[in-house]
Length: 224
Length: 225
Image 1 (cartoon, rainbow over the protein chains, first blue to last red):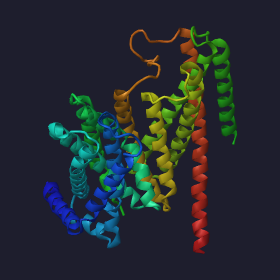
Image 2: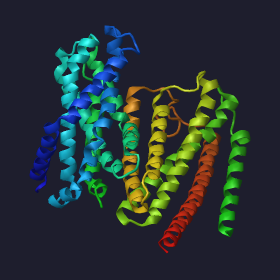
Image 3: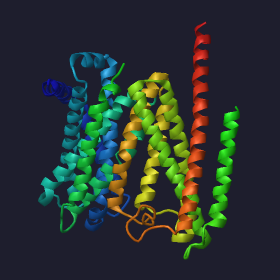
Image 4: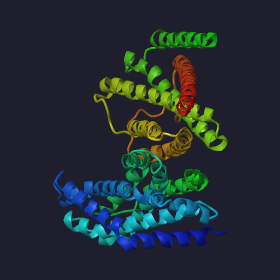
């Protein structure tokens, strides 16, 4: 039952590493910002159009940003062979995944919530009245992205062309997250917002299923 | 050798018989007429492809559990044959859709999820080309295969919730759905024939993969000397 203490120590390490340099956060925020600005050229961002396309745009930006952000997740551990040290230090390798995926969820969530006001201002979509619901969808969606992304970055770190491979493996697997989160966000941005619980349910089921799969098969991903 | 020739002969006979049944024995459909006959090939191939992916999933699980390279060979063979089947489905679908719906493609639930399924297994095969060491390749691709197969029902659920236009399930559908008895017999015969073809191709591909692994070992030994 050392999973939780181990995870929290490892999570502390992940957060310290990131907040010392803030490299991931800065680049991800700038990347999403660029995508948001570039997308505004592809359609006329009036309020009604934005309500229609904005949610899809946001989630595509989040997915692409995540596929960049998750690259160094396991790669970083390879440079000084710290992965072997990590593996030796915990009894359950699931703790390594859990710490990394919680950290990644947190990083994604921070970037998403920081960019939301900018998106809202640039695309003329009010988000304040539904902020708590948006936060819920962002959390569940980012959790799903992080679970699958963390697992796959352990795979891609062991392959050639890893920078190209990770998005290739990750994006089709994350289709359910993209579809359901986009639809839920869209309903929340409507003039008469509502929460489509079925969509929230799909994202939650995705999270739960893949967390279980990771728990069952995670240790094999880290085999020497 | 004889066994393989016999297998090929059985598959050819079954396929010819299924084609004959689809064109000449199955009754004419009321609204779509001859166009509907592609269904015996299209839907049966889809079923065969899905079976192949299920075989791939089982092989992936068995590899992770047993670590015998034969399960890796079976996994990649089934994935490639399944991918071939789904490619055929994605080609025959639009051939039917253009005259029936007036368009080649629509982002309907089944079409979209089939396309995502196809992309997932393309990724599986790409991953295999990116890892050199055989054991590592086998393990990593088996794990990705497990992820991909588990993703499929969720993809289907999510996209179905999102939109739907494909003809409602005729077989194992709700009340009011169902095939005319002769059509049903012809269809299930096609399913049998295409499963035989799929199994034959998987067996042949498995043989090839085994030979490739043997050649690999010999090459390594030669290099060591």
